[in-house]
Length: 127
Image (cartoon, rainbow, N blue to C red):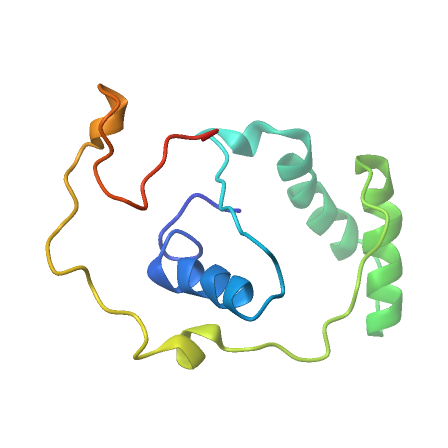
């Protein structure tokens, strides 16, 4: 996932994961972000090349677009591309369920320098 609060690092994303666990879609959920500079990975670099490739083709329908994307990304071990027929507005669905904490959490996290946790929900990676 992208490492930005606009798209993924926000309360809505965490509430969405909690919703999936609460409704037994998953037993538990984790959220991970790539390190700064991840745009230098092979897959991230492929998207610019993919756009250039698609702009050089005459594509008149969605099925042909999907075929071109799938064919191009096969070299990056992407095996399937799916057309989404509808999307959900999770921000609107979860609106009103998100409340800020009564007190701000301590920062930086206490576990970074000791074994004491800064908040009952905060756990060092791997615990």
